[in-house]
Length: 152
Image (tube, rainbow, N blue to C red; front, side):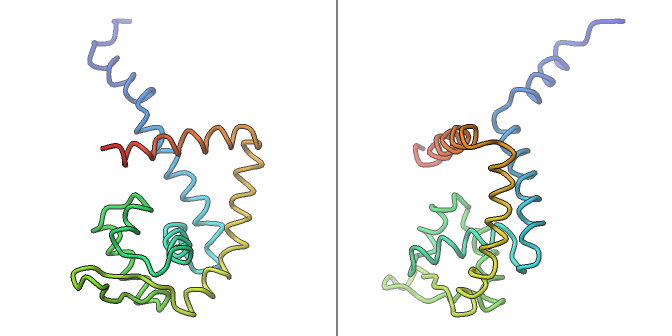
């Protein structure tokens, strides 16, 4: 059997060792699992995360919410538009008229409370699968990776 060309070896190494690909693949897999568990609540994990951060920091500017979620503003704007259409958040003009501020509505607080037990179930699945020690190592490693976004 002939040896693989150098380009194929490099491509295979990229596929097997690329930190970005590994993290993105894991993110897609865990997102699917959380979305499936959260389905009865009517929220997706991205929506749950946005509502949770908003709840803890409201009123919160769209810029700060983008920073907190490490989401580009265009993607966040699409998510916020949907959450506003669902009646879960209100968007207001901030003190700087160019800035938008996000707050949870009563319906948003109720949706978050309804989804929370489902989130806990998904979280428990992760904990049971990994174990406490591996989870803590993973959590710390992911936090370190996330900090790269703030080091730019």
